[in-house]
Image (cartoon, rainbow, N blue to C red; front, top):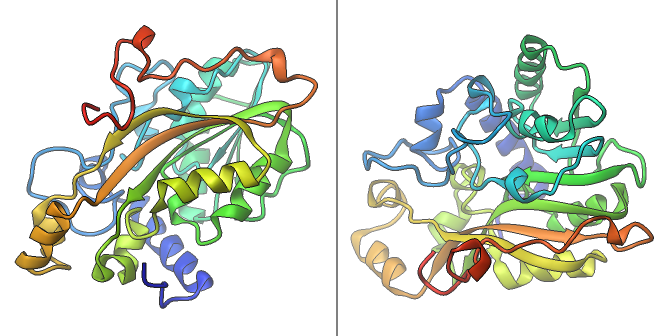
Length: 300
């Protein structure tokens, strides 16, 4: 894969600018594009998003249609937990987490786009939540003390970060021994065409910043995590009317037929310690007990 021609700081600034703009876009527009970046597709289906409609704690005003999974669905949040959401946007996953942790717990959302922080705080004020905080910060250098969180969640954000190994190390640092994360993200199998890799708008749209799934999981292990589990996996298909802005017809055909894959995965991992027995093993969505197929089997 060709190395990004933009520096990490240039990429981060492109993402910051785009997500500041996205904070003012409608959910419908965001859901029909690549995480809100790039043009809206004429094909009538959501590229990334999962449906939060039936999730308890969901607040429509906080849902900008930017996620690629439902990490809070698998996060095993318990009453009284301290939960941190990385790249919290308008607060959607924070409010779902708050439903689980209750008034006795605390939820902290971290985002580096100030318009998103402003929007999230306004939403929390409307809901009257005094135990949900939104803090401006870079998730490569979390503005959080060591060993404070029980659970970390994130939804389609780490793919936007140039230094992914550093983020996983930061997550490990802020989690308590026995704590864990549940993160939804975009990963690859095979190669992206260079035009997609290099385009800043596609980077802000979650796709160009994605890395190989194997490498992604290795970064998690290298950070010190154990019990690494893929809880859910689904294929992401970029519509032709979006691909055509970057690729020729021949390149689109080659990309679609070349064994390349873009996937949304939700991953669990644990910082093992004295409290490691606090949570039971995660039930993988693809297990027989859950009534779904195994991730990667081609039926998800």
